[in-house]
Length: 184
Ligand code: URA
Image (cartoon, rainbow, N blue to C red; front, top):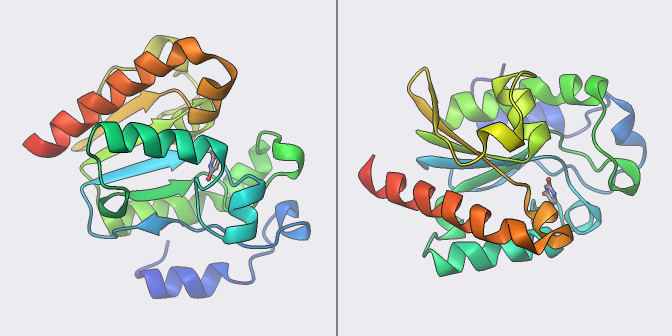
């Protein structure tokens, strides 16, 4: 664990803890406010994120931004990170060893930011943070409270690109988040 963002950034900058370092252009640590109440956690950078070094700037990110705009969630006011910080080749799922190698960075981010609400975008984020026994199908849209943090599991925005019928559920889940943001 790292005691400050400076320490974390220093430690991660030449990270070679897993094989994802071999093909990366940029490490995508996270973006947004570090003293926020709300953190979003995705899976791992895609091609656009790898080039820009910023999470959720590609197609899935644009869709998420549209939901943010509709719900008046200011992207600058939240913090956005991923389970793995380097792009898995061909956008495959990050493998278990890659997730584990990166977990200390994510845990440190959560510890330093101390969010009150964490939005888990998709199955990888859900299982990494809450445990393998959770599934998006049965958990999405339902708050889970653990150690004073409220978790909202929802679809990964890339899933909405493949299946439009998931958009309304995603929107409603973020609406819940917006409401809790205002009341916490
Ligand atoms: N998908 C993710 O899980 N994270 C990103 O940053 C972009 C796409």
